[in-house]
Length: 92
Image 1: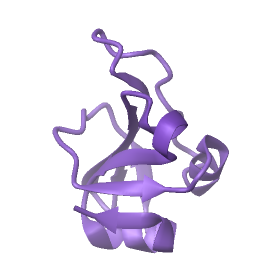
Image 2 (image 1 turned 135 degrees about the vertical axis):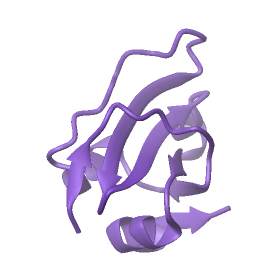
Image 3 (image 1 turned 180 degrees about the vertical axis):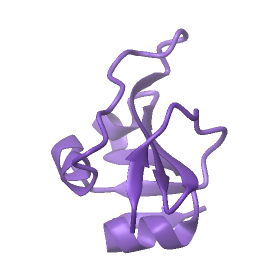
Image 4 (image 1 turned 90 degrees about the vertical axis):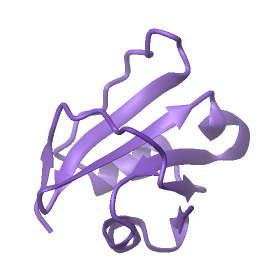
Protein backbone atom coordinates (compact mmCIF):
# COMPACT_ATOMS: atom_id res chain seq x y z
CA UNK A 1 0.00 0.00 0.00
CA UNK A 2 1.37 3.42 -0.97
CA UNK A 3 0.84 6.10 1.71
CA UNK A 4 1.62 9.78 1.25
CA UNK A 5 0.85 13.00 3.09
CA UNK A 6 -1.93 15.35 1.96
CA UNK A 7 -3.51 18.59 3.14
CA UNK A 8 -6.99 17.14 2.54
CA UNK A 9 -9.21 17.73 5.58
CA UNK A 10 -11.26 14.62 6.55
CA UNK A 11 -14.90 15.64 6.05
CA UNK A 12 -16.61 13.25 8.50
CA UNK A 13 -16.09 10.15 10.62
CA UNK A 14 -16.36 6.70 9.05
CA UNK A 15 -14.74 4.60 11.76
CA UNK A 16 -12.87 4.33 15.05
CA UNK A 17 -9.46 3.20 16.22
CA UNK A 18 -9.57 1.90 19.77
CA UNK A 19 -6.83 0.96 22.21
CA UNK A 20 -3.86 2.39 20.31
CA UNK A 21 -1.41 4.94 21.64
CA UNK A 22 -0.44 7.98 19.59
CA UNK A 23 3.02 6.38 19.22
CA UNK A 24 1.50 3.19 17.81
CA UNK A 25 -0.46 5.16 15.22
CA UNK A 26 2.70 7.07 14.28
CA UNK A 27 4.61 3.78 13.85
CA UNK A 28 2.02 2.65 11.31
CA UNK A 29 2.32 5.97 9.45
CA UNK A 30 6.05 6.73 9.75
CA UNK A 31 6.20 9.10 6.78
CA UNK A 32 3.15 11.14 7.84
CA UNK A 33 3.69 14.00 10.28
CA UNK A 34 0.64 14.66 12.43
CA UNK A 35 -0.78 18.15 12.73
CA UNK A 36 -0.61 18.87 16.46
CA UNK A 37 -2.12 22.36 16.29
CA UNK A 38 -5.60 22.40 17.80
CA UNK A 39 -8.46 23.30 15.49
CA UNK A 40 -9.94 26.78 15.79
CA UNK A 41 -12.73 25.48 18.03
CA UNK A 42 -10.17 23.32 19.94
CA UNK A 43 -12.26 20.16 19.40
CA UNK A 44 -9.57 18.42 17.34
CA UNK A 45 -6.10 18.24 18.91
CA UNK A 46 -4.10 15.98 16.57
CA UNK A 47 -4.72 14.94 12.96
CA UNK A 48 -3.01 12.68 10.44
CA UNK A 49 -4.02 13.43 6.83
CA UNK A 50 -2.88 11.02 4.14
CA UNK A 51 -3.64 9.31 0.86
CA UNK A 52 -3.56 5.51 0.86
CA UNK A 53 -3.36 4.18 -2.68
CA UNK A 54 -4.71 7.57 -3.80
CA UNK A 55 -7.72 7.50 -1.47
CA UNK A 56 -8.09 10.34 1.10
CA UNK A 57 -7.84 9.21 4.72
CA UNK A 58 -7.58 10.82 8.12
CA UNK A 59 -7.21 10.05 11.81
CA UNK A 60 -7.95 12.59 14.55
CA UNK A 61 -8.56 13.06 18.25
CA UNK A 62 -11.99 14.67 18.64
CA UNK A 63 -12.99 16.24 21.95
CA UNK A 64 -10.32 14.35 23.89
CA UNK A 65 -11.89 11.00 23.00
CA UNK A 66 -8.41 9.45 22.95
CA UNK A 67 -7.65 10.55 26.51
CA UNK A 68 -11.12 9.69 27.86
CA UNK A 69 -12.17 6.61 25.84
CA UNK A 70 -8.96 5.47 24.15
CA UNK A 71 -10.50 6.19 20.73
CA UNK A 72 -9.47 8.09 17.60
CA UNK A 73 -11.86 9.00 14.78
CA UNK A 74 -11.10 7.93 11.20
CA UNK A 75 -12.14 8.81 7.67
CA UNK A 76 -11.44 6.59 4.68
CA UNK A 77 -12.15 3.20 3.15
CA UNK A 78 -12.73 0.41 5.66
CA UNK A 79 -10.37 -1.95 3.85
CA UNK A 80 -7.45 0.48 4.22
CA UNK A 81 -7.91 0.93 7.96
CA UNK A 82 -8.53 -2.79 8.48
CA UNK A 83 -5.27 -3.57 6.65
CA UNK A 84 -3.26 -0.96 8.57
CA UNK A 85 -4.71 -1.35 12.08
CA UNK A 86 -6.45 -4.75 12.02
CA UNK A 87 -8.55 -5.43 15.15
CA UNK A 88 -8.08 -1.88 16.50
CA UNK A 89 -10.31 -0.57 13.67
CA UNK A 90 -14.11 -0.59 13.72
CA UNK A 91 -16.25 0.78 10.90
CA UNK A 92 -19.32 2.84 11.78
